[in-house]
Length: 279
Image 1 (cartoon, one colour):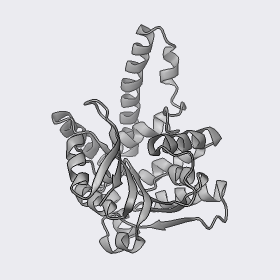
Image 2 (tube, helix red, strand yellow):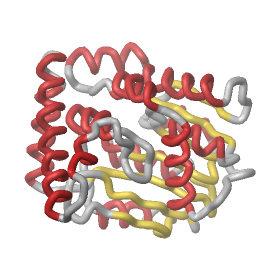
Image 3 (tube, one colour):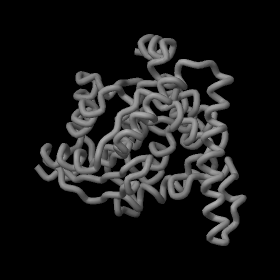
């Protein structure tokens, strides 16, 4: 699997999410962990996850696996990117060394035999992952199958902006075909575009515009990073999108009911869903 991943990266068919997460890990501290913990509690409507099982399908940095474990869940994390697996293992080593309630593996959500072998979980979490697999609906179908009866599915998928999403797709393809120096330039240009615009809005609202230009500032609510989120957004390929109603209909047809929905209101970014399996 690691050989296949490396070949996809070499062809420019896949972004190295794990490399970006490895850089992000340098900034992980107690404040970011606390934000991730608070985010999980808020979306799931729970103060603790004691006695529950938690599947992190596409663990990335491992931050939310760590948060779930700190909330008391027994956690199984996996990722297709070997460096992402290494990042998750590093967070465990750093904050919960030797913990036997947190298992970490290399695996693909598109590998039905592997996913079926995992069994069922009280909470399956896959935030901003399935649209990067190259087969989003197949991946969503597989994670739906990991949720136990009365269990919850917590996912986030990129919003479908029509033609604008098509233009983002072309930009992401281009990013993964060019050299590192040009990639850094693209990220810087988009960082300035998004954040100078946000700074201008803050100025109009008589707020401090310099806050929006601080690349080290954690992303509100989730404890992520302004800079590394932009790197992920620009480079994130494969890239697929979905309308909220499409995700709703897909999951309802598989025995789920919607418990939480947060959309980006037609803009770029992730629509967030929490479903509960009822049949």
